[in-house]
Picture 1 (cartoon, rainbow, N blue to C red):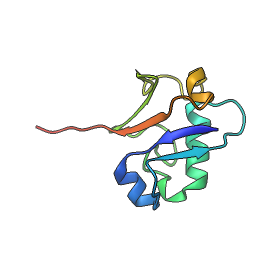
Picture 2 (cartoon, helix red, strand yellow):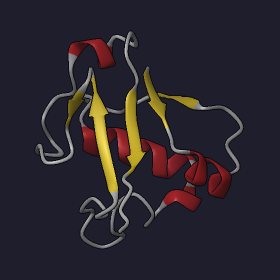
Picture 3 (cartoon, helix red, strand yellow):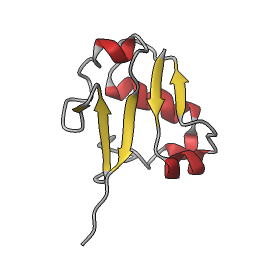
Length: 99
């Protein structure tokens, strides 16, 4: 079971009431398998976190776990043990820009 914390605007889009969702992931827990499970459970999120075709992370979305930025790591790299054990959440964060 993987805990995933989702930003408010995406929770609103997908009609998710809680700050975190708990997902069962098929196979080894990686960023790709977690996001696949999230999009399968909440189809409204398809194309919002990753591009629908390329599955590449959207520019203003970041991924964190255990106080580490995982945004530029391979989507197939194993997630930290604390995340796979359910002790820490996998965070999806909407980055901010402005000027």
